Length: 129
Image (cartoon, rainbow, N blue to C red):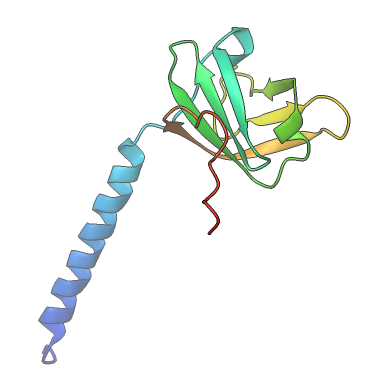
């Protein structure tokens, strides 16, 4: 014999499982961003976001934003960086950058997503009264 409310609990549980399955299916079909052939000229340009991240442009002029795992010492002032790709030669969320020069080092990428172009120029400060 069923207890009162058992059917309602089963229906709610089934609905929850269906919603979770749909959410996971949506994540699985979302393609991950990457720049192919980054080790063979696939990267056209880059611009540092202070020491927190990096805008990277591919050869098709599409911009991406690489958020870094931790502050990257020297990135904001770096003239030269290297892109450390995995064996497939693509730059993505599993890659790193190397800041070349004094005080530089390896900085791991946390996330890599399509982005608009980086802001140009300096940020205007608010007028003082």
